[in-house]
Structure formats: C-alpha cells, structure tokens
Image (cartoon, rainbow, N blue to C red; front, side, top):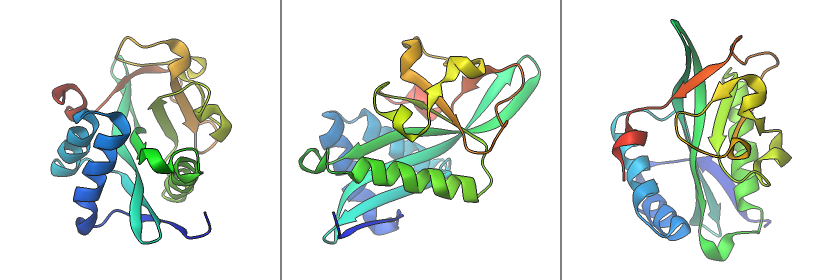
Length: 172
C-alpha cells in the first residue's frame, strides 16, 4: 500500500472512525467506546490510516493504571483497533500499530496493554501480560491479554490489575 498515510485523528474524521469501527466489529460498542473516551478527553493517542485520501483504519490508545494495593502505575491501553473489512489483511492494521508504538515510545510511555488476538499482537513484541504479573479486570483467556514494555523495565514491580477508564465498563 504505497499510498497509505498514518496520521493523528482530526475533527473531520469522527464520522469515518465511527463507520470503520461499526463495520469492522459488526456492532456499535467499539464506536461508542471511542466516542465516550473522546468525549471524556481520555485519549492518549488516536491515529487513522488513509488510503487514497479515504480513512480506512483507526487505532486508539487511552490512559489506564495498574493497581496493586496502594500502589498505582500509569499505563496505556490499546482499544480499539479497526480496519474496514475490504482493507483488512493488507498491512493497514500493522502500520497503525507500529506507528502507535513508535509515537508512544517517543512520548515516554512505558507499558501498553491490549486484549486481542493471541496470534496477531506477539509479532509486534507483545507478551502475555501474566508474564509481567499484570492481570485483566475482565474474565478473559490468559493468552488474549497482552502487554508490551515500550521502554525496558517499565512494568510495575509486583504487577497488579489494570484499571481502565470508566467508559470501558459503561459502553455496551
């Protein structure tokens, strides 16, 4: 995809992002989540993928925390990531993830968590979050909950449970 451009979301992209998430997931929950996070100003980074001037993919990163007793560490959560069905398996999702990882590293973020396909995300360096003693607050398969240290040794010592923004629990 020679004409693929990854850039930050702009105000004019809101409708396209909603459409992409609805088409990619076949439901409105993820689109509602994006709208809620954006509305609460709880977005760390939101990128779109443009192909031929048309927005065909989107990825969103939001603030989260790892909590263990009284200790709390800032992390970033990746959710959602969506590509229009007709552009899937063409490298759009990979380009969004790689650009997101680079920008988060450059911004000084240390740890990123994702609930996703266990055969997809490891190619970018994600490992089972349980290897870092980090737990998901939802009942999910261990192999589907992953994390990546964007900078060496940034996982909280002793691990803990991830706490997401309230929008994650409020959107259905």
